[in-house]
Structures are given as structure tokens and as C-alpha cells.
Length: 367
Length: 130
Image 1 (cartoon, chains in turn red, brown):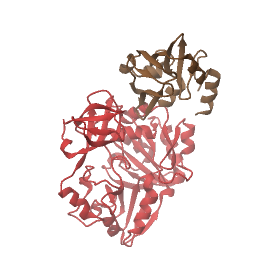
Image 2 (tube, rainbow over the protein chains, first blue to last red):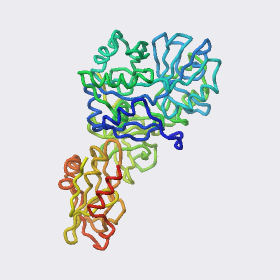
Image 3 (cartoon, rainbow over the protein chains, first blue to last red):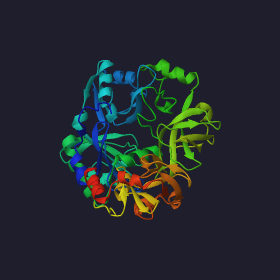
Image 4 (tube, one colour):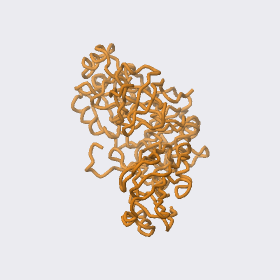
């Protein structure tokens, strides 16, 4: 998306996807499988059993040295000083205009000394340049091409991981932790994070080890299924997880996006803090909400939201037919006055105002 | 994968089929189209009596992932709509050439059929269009 003239890149699993019959598409400058046997089957496989996702296209930025913590505290909104070795946190990279450069995960490999930052594929080059530009003296390297990454997600995912990654016991790790180890002779980092709402982990592995790990997972008797980008999107939408370019972008105030829980203005100073916090203190003009349709129609990104008298009150950021609920669900920014649960709102679907209602999220509640 | 491409149908480049019986044209999407779409979860069709125009959109089909426009193979008036698809869009995946038909159109002019493909030409299109 950033660079359409460049030939799309291939992950270390490209040939495996082709062999598995994946339908390959260009996504964020990468050739990725959108689906294998079918989006719905893959969605259900993840919700009911185990899904394997190639997320090697994600970027990895390493921040090391005595100034690593200071640099990350300045660049990100969450409080990195709270992270002990082996802990991870979701966070944001604010830009200098009130919006966001990216949303990220920060992993503490060595307290005050060594951090791994996982960033969106479409933003990896931009993020790395941003890190270098605003560096406070840390040793920053772009390790994106050194690491493959596989997400293993689903109610049985942890059981599979305990077999594959022994002696590391993923079942004994808490949410948002990271452990280093080896798979065969390849260095790995196992993080109990994910983008589906399911249990499981995301495994960083030395690039050359990605295919051996993928094939070992697929060959296991628990029979996990490979999952394409299509189901990855419907799974995250059901949880109302933000996707850069949809719910958040370089103009989004993160409080409007409902991400206040990863902004820690009391704990520290950070890039453009005053502007971001002022927007909240002056009262948020719009809010990110989830809604369901009361009449027939599927909401899609970019559709306008309207009130009962037909005035525009916002727009849809993501929408799909939820495979789990078997009904359409949508995420939208609307004027704050229309953001409370149960408010009747309308979606303009191809020129027709179709009735909808603000609902509680996530749409799918995992117990 | 081998798709069934009936010889008595006409085809658009957008993967609709048209079966002609005198001046009545039944319209659907091809097996190739349903395979590309994936599981259809929503169908939006015109009402009976509505006028439609060749090459113009007359409805949409949606999968979980995407919205696809339907293009009219001929101009005319909609005389029947397959309302069963509204309740069970999966018919479009299971049997696109029969049960999954979309609308019946009273055609304005059979001259427009000359703008459509026959099966050999359409087979060639889908063998290169993957």
C-alpha cells in the first residue's frame, strides 16, 4: 500500500501457501493468502479448534542500549517502565499532528536494555524511519527481514504449542508474556498475544526456520488449519480490534478510538501528549462504536452513518457478515451524541438508509 | 478446477449468464464467479417491474469479505425475482446455474445478445482470468 511500484515481497512461507492451494493476493506490499479452502471454514476452525496464520509480513524493530527505555517512553503512549523482562504491552505511536503513526506491541526482552517492537506490515518502513528520526540515543535496528512469524490461535492452540515447543510450556504463560527458546536449531520468541480473541500465541522465528515450524505444526495429529487474511479480518472485527487504515490512521485521536487504556499521560511525557490529551479534555467529538443491523444489509468501510433525519453523523470503518454470529456487524465513528448503546442509527448502503443499532462490544464474547 | 459452462447460455465478461427463452431472459452468475466470490452471505436484487440496462449494475452479491456488483446482460424489465435467495444465499454457491438464478427479464431487443459471449469464448476467458 505504501509503495505500489515495488514488486510485492514474499514471506518465507510463500511456497507453502501455494502448495496448500492458498489464493494469493497483494496485501500491503506482500503476496499473502487471502484464503485456502474458504473463509468461513477457516474462521470456524480458529474459533472452535486451532488456526495457523502466517504473519511474517509484520515488521520487527529492535530497540537496545542504555537509552532504549527513554526512547520508547518518548515514542509510545503506554508506560514501558512497567514492563519486566518477558512481559509485553499493546501501545501506540503518536505522530506530531494529533494522529497515529501506527499501533504496536512492545516486548521486553531485557529490562531497560532490550526491547522488540512489532509493527504493521504496511507501516514497517515508515515506522522505522520515525524511530530513527526521534531516537533519544538508543541502538535501533530494523530486524523485519530476519524474523518469520506464525500465529497459533484457538481454544486448543496452547495444547498444540506445549507439544511443539517443549520444554517451554505455553500453557503456563500468562497473557502478554514472551519467552525465548529454540525450535530445532532456530531461535524463537514465543509471545502469548494474538489478534483473534482466542487463546494462543505468536511465535517469532529466525526466517529460515519459519517453513520447518509451519510444516511441523501442520503435520501434528491435532490437525490445525492454515488461515488466510480473510478470516484474520473477520476474526478481529468480531472482537472490535483496531486495524490501521480502518479504525485508526494518521488523523485519529486515540481516545476517540477507545484506546485510552494504553495512554498513560500521568505516568510520563510522550510525543505530542498535550494535543492528544487536550482533545479528550475538551470533549470527544466522535467515538468508535459497534453496531448491528436491524434491517437487511452488510455495512462496509466508507459507508456513511446517518441519523433518523438523514444527516451524516459518521462513517463505517469496518464491516462484515460475522461468521460466528451469522449476522452483519459494523464498526463506525459517529458523533458522540449517537454513541450510547441502543441508539438507533442508519447506514447508507448504496443510497438506501438501512436501520441499525449501537451495541456492546466485542460482538463475540469469549469466556 | 473444471467449471460447468452450459452451451445454451450467453455470458458477460463480468461472469453473469443469460438463458434466453423467446423474449424472456433468466440471469445468474457463473460457477466461476461463485468460486471466486466464496460463500455468498447477502444478495440485493431489483424489484419486479424495475427497468435495467445492459452493462449497468442491477444488484449486488456479497461474501463475508467483499461486495460484487451484478451487471445486466441485456436491457429490459424485471418480471420475476428469485426471492428464495434472500433467505438462503448459499443456493448461489451450491447451484449457480439453476436454483441460484437471480432475475427474469423481459428483454427489450434481442439485438443486444450480439454483445454477449457464447460458451467457447467464455471458457477461454475464465482459463486466463484466474
